[in-house]
Length: 472
Image (cartoon, rainbow, N blue to C red):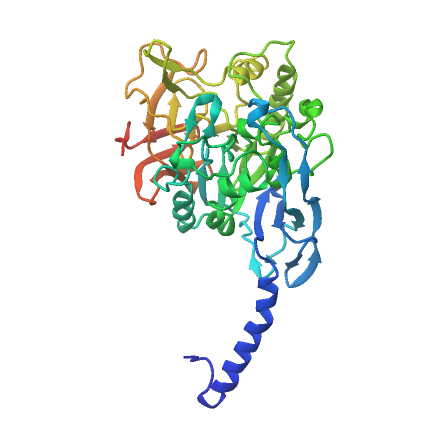
């Protein structure tokens, strides 16, 4: 039973083991409901987070030494504020947990909280999971009520577990974590009893609960979606997820401060071998073109300038945000006719006012979400490849993207599509496996982890094995 102990010492070994377990048990039992994870910040800073119902922060052990964590956000109730929903379908945000954090130095070899090891990324990141749009949609304005109680209709937990089994070095989330905005109405059996709103219970149901295997497996690089704008789940975004310090006036608690809370500076996360991620906040961009009199115009022009400066630090850059600039969305107009929509015109207008080709020259790849499909495009004109991974849990788009684009179809003015691949109405995740400084093998997995498509990425060139994956 205990082959490491000589036979005469087995009883003693068993006794010591039981004593050790007895000593550990009270520590573990003292932390019911504890959530721990690591989010990467500017320069690859490793930020350990603990979310706890306790009244004080746990200790963090770094390289064998216990250290205190600092309070990021206390528990409390935030008064109801204007949201994207009718006031009758909104409520105050109750945050019933304490949020704590600590910086884990880049040279540290190990870290743990309450005996739970934290996943610290290697300096050379080679295996990446990419997910997005993961929450369960309950939204009265759209008359959209996803069956959150049905793991087949809302499979994010299954997707997260399969992605964790792939053993990534890093997880990239391209935004939209919380969708349970409004109460589930009577008669909607699929979401009966679901928590709703923007408080801690909705964050646990929509994100921290189903994402647990991935949070424990790898560090996260987290982009902010439009569902995390201040008029939606921005309070929880700043409290739980964003890697930067939480500052009064940027916490989305007071709508008068939303101009500060809805915009953040981009930052870079090194991947090794001369490559890096650049994450930027597109949470408040409109679908239509911005004009110079709108606040977003100056904010996103400033974002472009800072992306350009960051991109000069590495030979190969992957730009991560929520809204795709070089992809399509398929739908139907009011008459029921097929409609193909281009990339986000708000960002295109602001970035394009500074650079007609929209992106700095060292940006190879764009990772985004927002459109609830998997989609990949490469271009004959000099633009980075674009991949959309909005297919990891939220109610999917079901109008198929065309296998062959109509003549003249373009996601942005002057952009010529060379190749396109898509998977519509299928849940899953994507993996990126490093093949060289600017080379990645992308595999698209279904909810069980099976590979349904493979793409080769070399610099800004992308080619996929299958042009259109069959609907499940």
